[in-house]
Image (cartoon, rainbow, N blue to C red; front, side, top):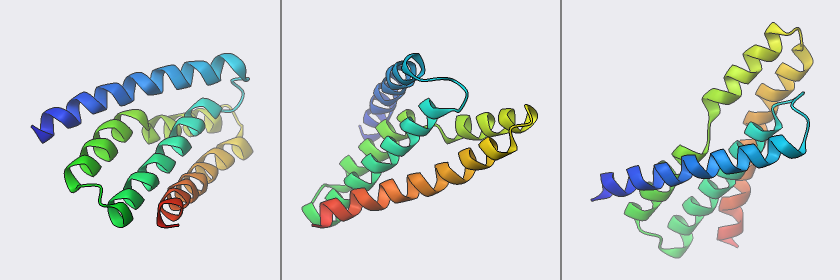
Amino acid sequence: MTVLLIAVFGGIGAASRFVVDGSVRTRWSRVFPLATLVVNVTGSFLIGLLNGAHLYHGLGSTWLVVAATGFCGGYTTFSTAMVETVRLIQAGELRRATANAVGSVLLCLGAAALGVALMAA
């Protein structure tokens, strides 16, 4: 049953990513891969909240795995972030590529830590 729930939540996460990504892309320029950054940072924040709920508020292990691995795994897209970084490099946009790669890692780690911290408070 857990595997089925992970698959269902993964599909919901992927559909959510499609909606968020499309919404961000239609509102802001495509010069910088902002949509993927928004998806990954918000997904990391949610993973932090889920882990904090597990550590401090009794969220069961099964639901942590279903939500974090299923939904957030389907929602976040770090492979796309790296493909976009490579495309920026190929276009000669080295500063933007560096900002995308380093910024993604730092912002996502910070968002996850913030999520855990909020649940610990």
